[in-house]
Image 1 (cartoon, rainbow, N blue to C red):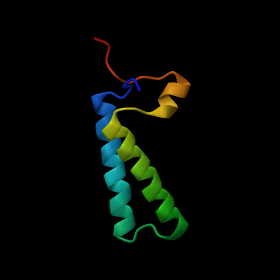
Image 2: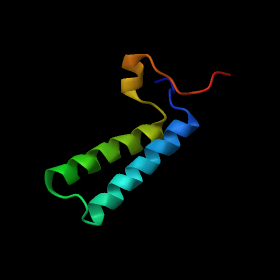
Image 3: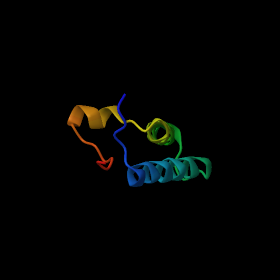
Length: 67
């Protein structure tokens, strides 16, 4: 897997994952919508940690700076 996430993209993904978690655990979202939000947050966090997004590869996108 070739890295395709830039620093700004990783930071935004982590912040969105944290925001989704906060919304769920404070009771703002619940039920199916809350679980879906947690799942999306988990995917965003995982992709930011491994520095790779499969969807970006399919779409031919890379936010990583060229050296």
